[in-house]
Amino acid sequence: MIDFRYHVVSLISVFLALAVGIALGAGPLKETIGDTLTGQVEQLRAEKEDLRAQLDAAGTDEAAAEAVVSASAERLLGGSLTDRRVALVLLDEVPEDQVTALGERIGQAGASVAATVRLTDAWTDPALRTYRQALAGTLVSYLDAAPPADAGTETELADALVQGLTGADASAPDQVSENAATLVELLSSGDNPLIAVTGEVAGPADAVVVVAGPPADPAQASPSPDAAAAGRDAELAVLDAAQRLSQGAVLADGPRTPESLTSAVLADGERTERLTTVSRTDDVTGQVVVPLALAARIAGENGHYGYGDDLEPLPPVVQLPPVDRTPAADGTGATDAGTDPAAGAGAEGQG
Image (cartoon, rainbow, N blue to C red):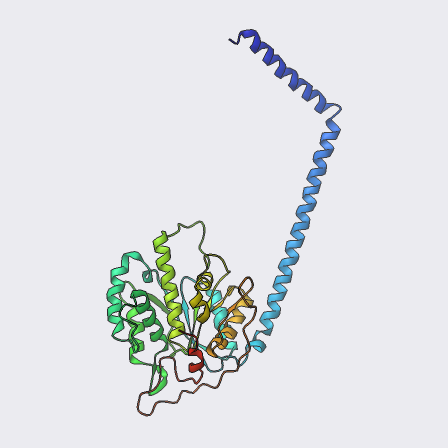
């Protein structure tokens, strides 16, 4: 059993150790310890300043590179999409400056933005599943080319959206068809609109750019695995329909990550062969590549563009034929994708 004398000896030992430490620190070791700490602080300060200088230099180089690409964009893009009409379909809340930049690049390529629509939360809200099923049943009756009966609600809604944006009046190809206008109206109205339309639909689109939203904020609550899978299936259905029902489509995605839509496409061998993707369209380089990739896809060239594994830096150079929007004499013969002779080429590889 430990007695009182043991405690006394222990306390005396502790105080002796403290006294020795104080004496050495204030005496013979004072200069050594002080010099060592001062040297380490100065070294860390120098390393910090060096890293900051490197970061500033890298930022300056990146800004300079983006300035060069931006200044060259009109020359690089000119004539690649002459007279085409492009619809922008935003899968989520996309920063306004990014949408504006994509529209400017499309304009520099000689095309115009026919419509800009955004999928609302109601498009995938689990609580509105029954509502979407009922609405899809109504929308199918307005489709010029209805999907198979067992296609599912996601496919029916996606087909309705794309046909609503691309459907042209056969006798007046510069105007949307009556069915197309009805589809957009039904999707964008009611107590739970599935899409939000920015401005007016200027005319039927020839091609579609599907724009993915920014990466999810880690600070926000993640959806359940089932909800996340359903949301991803709905996004892929829109991308599938955009390619299948137009002359050509491109996914304008953000950074390539395991969770990005581009990664989902590349993980599916069949989709990899027929869907075109462009990564990092949140910066200038990616935005300039989008019209070039769209022109290539209309011409029947599929690819995945950006920087990283399985990605190519640039699409191949193609020359699209002039657009032909001659009205059909008997009111028939025009397609939802327009009357562009390149439509046949763009259909290759769509599956």
